[in-house]
Structures are given as C-alpha cells and as structure tokens.
Image 1 (cartoon, rainbow, N blue to C red):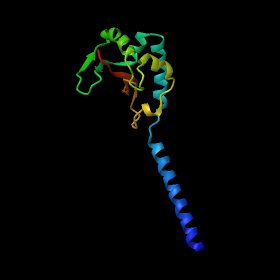
Image 2: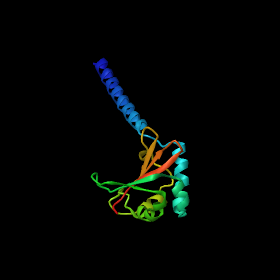
Image 3: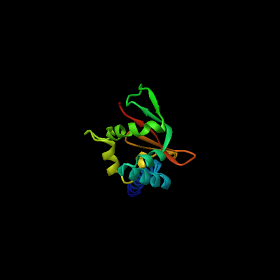
Image 4: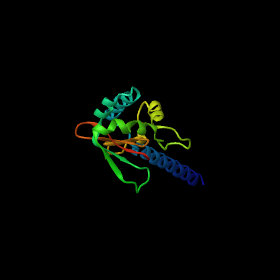
Length: 149
C-alpha cells in the first residue's frame, strides 16, 4: 500500500511539474520587443508628445498607408507632403484597447515602453493601438494607421 501511495504522489508531482513547464514554455513563446524597437519607440513617442511633425515624418515610411477600421475598408496612401494634414486625425483615433473610448495621443502618453504583446514573434513589426510600425532596411518606421475618416 505504501508503494502505491508513493507512486501516486510521484505521478501527481510529475504532472504538476509538466503543467508548470508548459506554462513557462507558453510565456516564453510570447514575443518581447527588441532593444532597437524600444529605442525607436522612445524617439517616436517624444516626437509625438513634442508635436514635432518633421521628426515624426522622418520616422515614418512613405507612401504611408491608412485604412478604415473595418476589414473591407479600402487602403489609401499618403505622401510625405500630405502627412501633416492627416496626422492630427490619427492622434484622435480611438486605439480600441478598452471599453471606454480614448485617443491614440492618450495611449502614447501612457505607453513609455512597448509591451511584449505589442511586438510580433519575428521582431520586425509592432503595433500600438491602431498604429503599425515595421523594421525596414533603413530602420524602424511608422508605416500604417487604422482610422475612420
């Protein structure tokens, strides 16, 4: 009887350890944001908070792409010369991250560092609210935004 009890305890312990390992494996599969993405985000965020449209444009890729929030929405390309006219509307967009509507500007103010959930597993793209950033041959760039005009 003692032997069966010991085997049962060992089996339960092995099961608990396996569940723990699976949980750790799942957590490590979650992407973390690269150092270069964090550095870019810091620079980009400061440019936005200081309303430095020239710097924001320098940190963006053109033609820039905008889409509506619905899947069937058409995409529109924005040239560098048009960017300053559309950017204020991008700041007012609801990031869609909470039940209470807010703005992308508010999200930028509160997002000092990129959350691991913002970055993809390939370390070549991250998304903050309705804005998309990609690692290009030149460096990280703001490449796309979703909003209803």
